Length: 167
Figure (cartoon, rainbow, N blue to C red):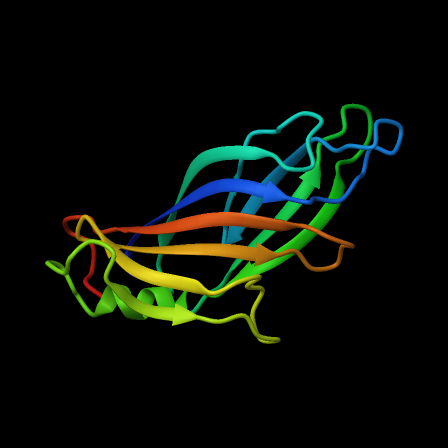
């Protein structure tokens, strides 16, 4: 049986400069999926928009801090299969290491660690892991792969639950 560590809230903020998949309208109807083990979550569809604002909150159960979250952006199609608009991968291990430090009580905005874009990650810009209201948070702008253009902005927040196994 896998041990339950806690919950990860993923606030899906927006997409920027996403690829055109509906050529007749020079647009797309994007949504984002997140996969972690057997868990699969998705945002709502934003119609006719290459710079969508989702502002959706999705929550995943974390059992393995070393497992990465896979995300993909799709163009919703009514009469055919949805078109893929790129994918990305989110390594949560640095975030989970910050959670493990148990840094409650730090002032809001205290930066625990900054991750920088590299060939080993999908970051489009520097990504701070910081404290806000006694919670570990991380802001990410992820570059989409396997597509001509596009980025997705998300924010991670750790939710400790009573009875979950401490990391």
